[in-house]
Length: 194
Image (cartoon, rainbow, N blue to C red; front, side):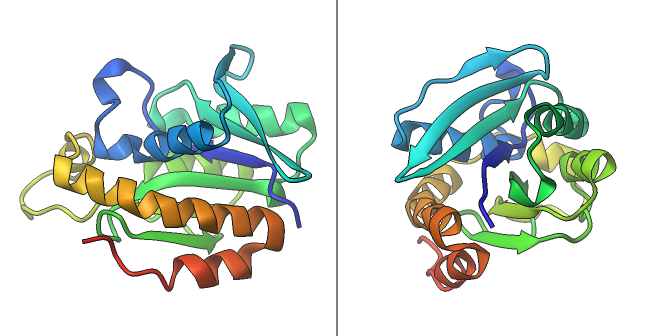
């Protein structure tokens, strides 16, 4: 089964660029750099869009240009317009269940309290691959979850995520060329960046 769309969740707007909730955009920007592709704006969806190739595999990178809670609409429009089945979608998003730098690939499931994933499920159903990028849990139990995910990513955590992204991108290449089990086997057995 080919994977042809990698959609990163995040909040549109300068004030969100360095927040934990925008880690998906951070990772997909690293992917765009790796494949030497440029972003263009597609206002009809609305998304930022780049097209990349790996060997004989072509795929799209997209960033919905909305707030996180509305991410599913633009992704659904993009898939419908290009007649791409849901089975070819990978949604890249932040996840508090994993430590910074830890990454997991899963299929289906609930939104787990993530409003962007919830929006995707609302518009598309849940039968898609999720690339979950760890941002770590709240350190203060009294802190509101929204304040945590919308907080600035500490520099040490950013470095861990960047270090982990190299193995993650190798896993994405396996996902594209060999499928989900091979990619999971590779990514899930990597040591957490220190």
